Amino acid sequence: MTTATIAIDVDVPAGVTIDEYERIDDGHAFHVSWQLPERPRCATCKREAPLQVQEKNKFLSIRDLDLWGKPSFFVYREVLHRCPQCGHRQSLLPPFKRRDVKYTFRFEEHVLVSLIGSTATDVAQRLGIAAETVERIVKNRIDDAKAKHIDPARKIERLGMDEISLRKGHKGYATILTDLTDAGRPEILAVGKGRDEAAGQACLERLSAQQRAAVRFHHTDMGPAYLKACAELLPKSQSVIDRFHVAKKLGEVADALRKKTTALTSGP
Image 1 (cartoon, helix red, strand yellow):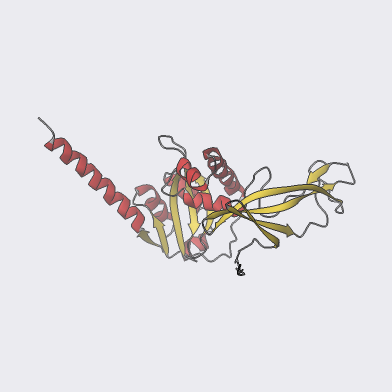
Image 2 (cartoon, rainbow, N blue to C red; image 1 turned 90 degrees about the vertical axis):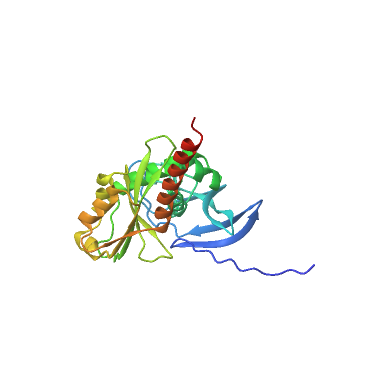
């Protein structure tokens, strides 16, 4: 049998190293490692101390971005640190995920982007995760946004503002603000609760006045809420209505006309 070598290009987070690749069922597993901190901070006594490593014979699997249409995972051995001050033992958190979840930060971002034009149920079915997981990701990112600091030196020329819906028929909406300056690597800057003008303004106010003045284009839907927020806070920016939103609005008009015509022709 002839064998061939295939190279897999994987964009890993800064400071993370891929040590081994393994194919698991219908997915990809990348065994990873990262630089451990020299002086971890104890979660109990809050004091820093030299690292006291205790490795467990336990491997954790964390969902990452899909590869070639199949799910991929970061796999790593759990590393514990015992505080020499109080004796508390804690698991050292890798730099690519938050505590008590089984997915990476960039998987969270992928979920948020996937929610544009979809619901939590739709996204959950496509990604093979629970709708509750999608909702938890949105909640965590909204909480993060309250404390997130956007680098005031960041150059932003193009922004996107979209609403995301968690469940059909429910009022679980959020607004996401995305840096679209590099079309190949969009980055979510802020997430706000709700989908009204106030939510749009709250996201934009996370940027400095100088950053808002430097924005040249903003992409939104055709609703007045986001358009008003951008008109007020992005004084030099031009509104761009994406083709997706135009097509959606035309579809709604055509559907309404179809229903009206059907009702007239089927009447007595």
